[in-house]
Length: 137
Image (cartoon, rainbow, N blue to C red; front, side, top):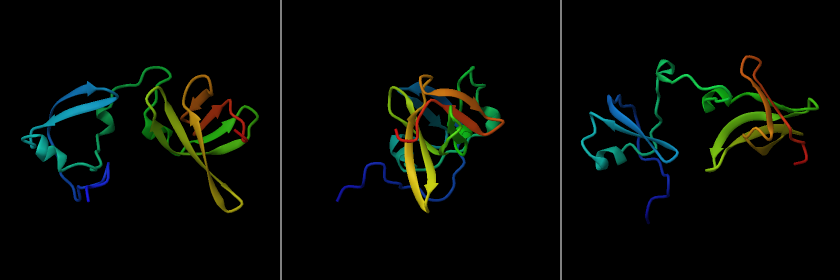
């Protein structure tokens, strides 16, 4: 049986020296000095990648790193709590906030496109995203 798409293969930790990076589609491609070819790189499929925050480029106005949005509370214009950001999805044209909210002992998931038409404000210091979104959407 073929492995599942996106299956995780890598276990453990490995430090890599990155020689070069370039943009490709919606992501980055990196060449590591320690990986001689594509086959060696494929052995790291599913590995988590850690980059020091000091290596991040400064985001432009109204740009955010996903890692900074995870955990923020989301409220609508009326002050109704819609949930907490658990993840983001890259759907191609836009990113989507994945919210979880506990209601009556059950976790409900809500998806909100992370676009200016629905996102009024991101206040990282306060830990809140204000949106034009109703609880019954």
